[in-house]
Image (cartoon, rainbow, N blue to C red; front, side, top):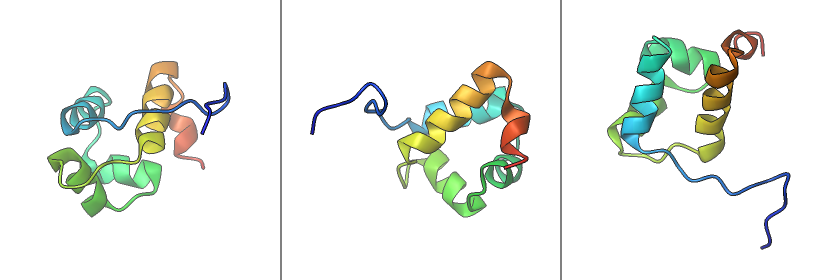
Length: 76
């Protein structure tokens, strides 16, 4: 399937990248899971590497953190 400029292929994040981003944002597992409306157990599995995090979830959090728009996610 050809890539478009609107839907680029995004690689999955490593467990280390996932934890580092959460730590950078100074959020607990419970806080970040509530913010992104995901199960805390799933988040812990992503950080431990027992499950792959969907790339769009990581990308959303990374963009929000980079742009200082993390608060917008909490109002979604």
